[in-house]
Amino acid sequence: MDRSNIILTGFMGTGKTTLGRLLAKRIGYKFIDTDALIEEQVNQTITTLFQTQGEDVFRKLEAELVENLAQKEELVIATGGGLVLNSKNVEILQKTGQIICLTATLEDIIKRVSKQKNARPLLQEDNPEIKITELLRQRRAVYQQFPQISTSGSSLEILVDEILILADGSRD
Ligand code: S3P
Image (cartoon, rainbow, N blue to C red; front, top):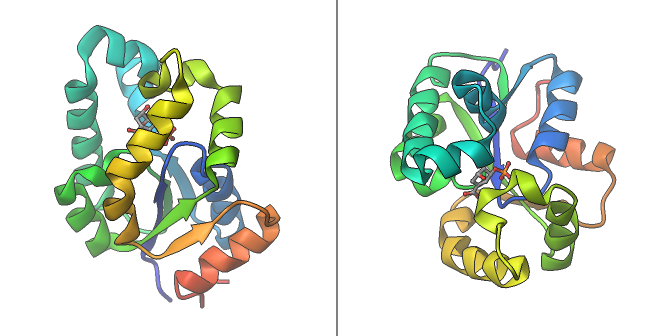
């Protein structure tokens, strides 16, 4: 049986955590959310960590976590949206499993992230829509290197099925 990990990446608000949790439950894997693990480790929210120690420290913690997770199997990992911008993280994660990128329409992203505005330090702006559009433009090429699934307009159940098919699904 294939025990390799399934790694969900993609921009903020594309559904990585929600779908990752459901997917893990479906296939009996452990669910890991990299942001949540870092918050536990430093005992601070990501927003406070960015404010007190800066983004660089956060990115270093992400990279350390990736090294650690690469030793494990049977994980569904929801990454923070910027984790794959570091190509070394990608290289390591690709050796342990399949990376799938979730996407959503700009409208859905804006709607979803506005619900948890304070949880997203990169979007603490007067006009988060402009920032989202700019970040999406900057990151497009990075996200496009992975197989993609749009989470706009499909049910969660169908999306879990789609992810499993993409991840080469003899797991269920
Ligand atoms: C970030 C995304 C966030 C979190 C941090 C930075 C990014 O995670 O890691 O705020 O650079 O896109 P989510 O994608 O889970 O919101």
